[in-house]
Amino acid sequence: MEQTVLETGLKLTVQKEVGEKDTSKHYGSGTLGDVFSTPALVAMMIEASARLVDDHLEDSFISVGKMSQVTHEKPTLLGESVSVQVTVAEADRYHVVLEMEAFDETGLIGTGCHERMIVERDSFFRKAMERARRLENKDF
Image (cartoon, rainbow, N blue to C red; front, side):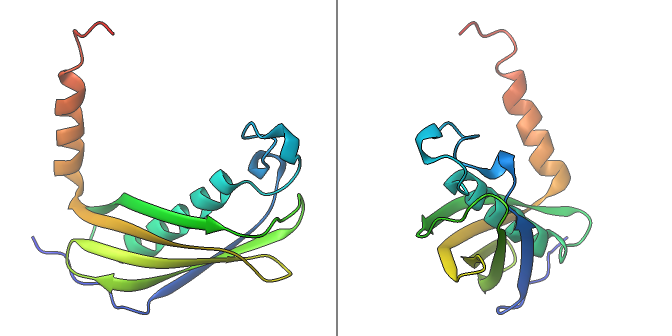
């Protein structure tokens, strides 16, 4: 079964209010306090990318992350809103490159690029289980 190609220019925007679990303090950078953390920004960008791609796939396919590159330029405080827009920049049947931008109420706070691979769901999980079985009797 072949997957269709996503159109370049396809976009999705997600928004959220920065909560306690999104702050640098929650991720172990206590000296930064209640500012939006880079790991939370990356997670938000990847989640938006996965939603955009997966919402356009046939049922037997899923997308998996391959690479992310993110630059987090400006601080955003607890309680402020962050919006992430992801756009399909390149795509073929099994590979998607997404451009990502993040904004708060003041302006641009981060940019990035994310690559996702499109794989058959059953095959992916079968391979994951095979890898897990190889570890069953290992003593680390």
